[in-house]
Image 1 (cartoon, rainbow, N blue to C red):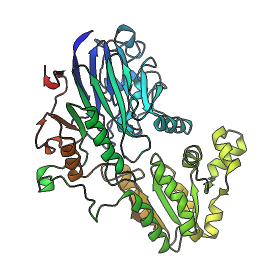
Image 2: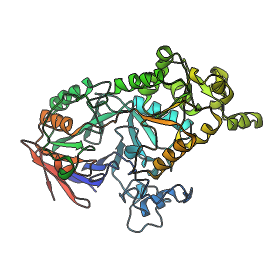
Image 3: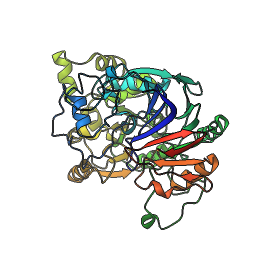
Image 4: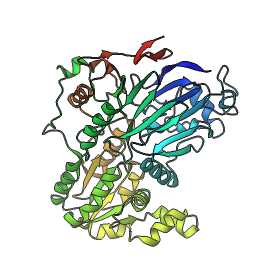
Length: 467
């Protein structure tokens, strides 16, 4: 298929939080971004009890609608039983996938792709993925054919030019993309926020995108609410409200809680937020408590951070693995490099420790002296009410008498911040997505386009319209 115009299709993420998948084709070249999965634990068919099949993974994900039926991206052997879908071997287009950041709702489906398809991520993102892969957090399916791209360095797929532009999100390596063809250009923001550690990146991204020039702005709108919920119009405002927790304040709030806690300090975080891991390590100096990570997070810190002043938790299961000689090499290397902490150490001096506890390892709490302790829930899973596991966590903490403190901040811009960035970019055409209510984000000057699935949009003469 050789197109003489630029064709855009929206495959996922239009009215969902995540799952954004969009293709841009010019002549016989095509770029697809992102390739994530929609996170909906309450409604997902894979509920943790249904066992995923290893040999039919791609077939199952396509058949269940978890990834879209896109021609020319899947291996023939993976989709042989799916009628009407062309395999990568049967498609002559040059295709590449570009990933904005390493959250599952933007990259969780990239293992479904044929290893023949190059998948471009920024340098930091590749480094983080390879670290996560080692500790068992690889994507299902094939190992992606990862390629590094670099901030502000343009690369090409056919005649399509892609320029990664750094933005601030709660994961390292995050970027937006400027995507240009001879017919026009798109700026895709990816996910971003103004209340993070690097708000200057957003202003710089605005400047860079306008410098490169674009016709269509594809923009996230995660925090947008229905007009009946929000009860107000969205006005552009870049200021940070007092009630909004800024990323730099998260660790300060943790410190304040620890100062008032006479027992064990515990924290539940998402270790893909590597900068927060770094902030927690620094708490040893201000809190006087030894910072203790589970082995997986310790490996992330060991590989990606210069800060090494932490200990590792050794559970009974880890000791059993070690005795049996089945401990993976990466775990063995951590045990040789870092101080060990066991339950007996913490129980002898609870006030001397600040210890990680993830939801999946919650039964470790039964071995710890948690009297007068504090459980700091800082954006670690389960995140909230929409996840059935969240209620299970609350039930467990109540049962053992452990007080929970919610201290965290999200990775997505507030509605007034979205509007501020929108008006600064001032696009000809706005496509809001990654939102339950994208219609709430309306440009003052440009045209609002709410695209449809299974429709084709054409870019020509620096405009975009439905075919």
